[in-house]
Image (cartoon, rainbow, N blue to C red; front, side, top):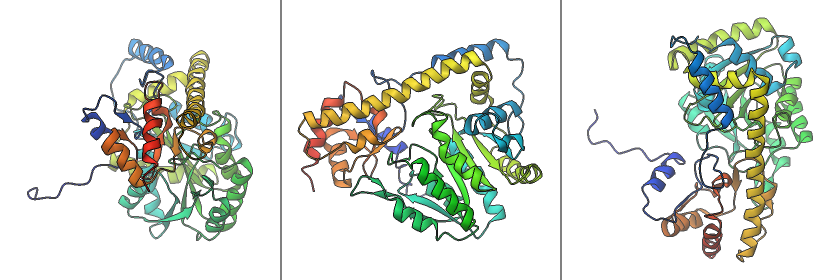
Length: 399
């Protein structure tokens, strides 16, 4: 069974990191995987996280299993974080939340749950979208289709075509939306555009599924929930996949959540029981450590203030890096207008580099960028900025 098998292709993103690690070039640069880097190129542990871990270590009394959906206090903190404390959906007890091993598990559990009740539905994803989205939903048995999103000519949102496409999605289908910091483009919807999307979702009867992997990395914790709030107001049902890899820096602790919002409390309870079944057959119950960190921080006002300050510092660092990168490209005489990079949000930028140019950068400069030209802006540091810009100038000579 296991002999003479063709190896599977490397992962489009994580495979790049492995290649980067094995590259002997001392000037190598990894702009592929989405991890935050400080000015020295490190991915730090937040001090608020270290403090929470010290508290957990000193007070822990058991290593017993977590409940299938995780701890109730974790669910409460997540719901208040994504919706805001006192939101009407929380008051009406319309939301239920499961602690999952990262945002990817939240997407997969949501997909398995939906496949049970909408076996013939299609899942619609933006063009382009995160490289793993299609695989997650296809592995759950869904047909995956695309709706227009990015305009390569304007380097911005093609909203007219997007809303036209969403207006033709059949009732009962599922539409995956990036709540903020769109991956891979960095191009987000305005508040007014979110209202239009919510109105179309309500009118057409398709189910919104929001990937909320970067809350706090765009404009702020409250500001980044604008699209979610518009959809909750307009739609009786939706799903939200949260990740705390970026905003808490819990990359290796794989901490996330799946939140189900239903029309009423009874429906939420009944539906969530099937989410629990999907969890049970996938991983049985979640790992505790990351969830305990999140609950310890969000459940203590002083710790939360410290964490929010650190999150704001990361967000502002990325915004400054965007501006610095645009200025450096101009200084190095790189042809073209790259001001769009400064307008994008979150970690990623759709740089406009062609696949041939991406290959040139990897093969000759040891600069690792995801196919399609997605750059992790958070991976740009003072030590690699000049080398990166000079290399891009060379790459742009390739057509």
